[in-house]
Length: 220
Image (cartoon, rainbow, N blue to C red; front, side, top):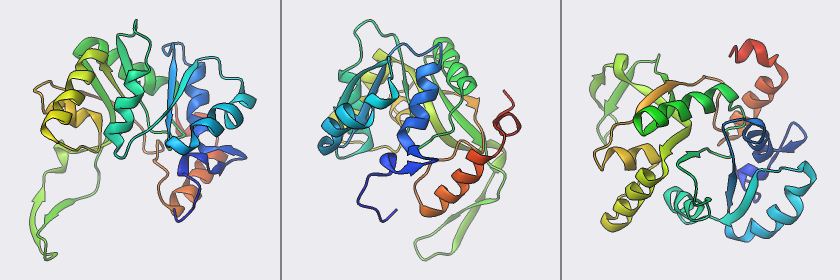
């Protein structure tokens, strides 16, 4: 983004980007507890200044993240209530998560042990060599673009993270860590509007989604 402020704290529709996702999780009947993971130097300001005005009742802890995404998830797992059986991991910069997405992915984790939200690819996808020349065209019929939330049996996710720590494996999502220890992960349908705000143009797209009637974009 080119900002000094972490993306999740940027103002988006007059409230921080993070708060949009938290409001959905707070109101969802499936979610019992929320652990917020933020940069270490933002823990105090987030817990004492940013979040209190919104009166969230399900936030049990605000903890510092790590160098990598998987380190941050691991830190969050350490703060989860000991009675938890299923954990949902969600990107703070995906403000348009819906109740239906959360419930579908949790149901998938209950049935299969692990589930993710994703959408099928519609564009042609090619694999290129380091010199920029095309190597092959992939079969898009079997390709999905992965989103969050992702849900897992908590012990399965812990096992996957411990394995990655022992072997030094890095991943861009938790599902990969679960896959590599031999556990299959199911897919539930997401939405093209469940965008991840990572670039300036994403904010423009997000503002347009925010202004549109929600029932038209997310006909749950």
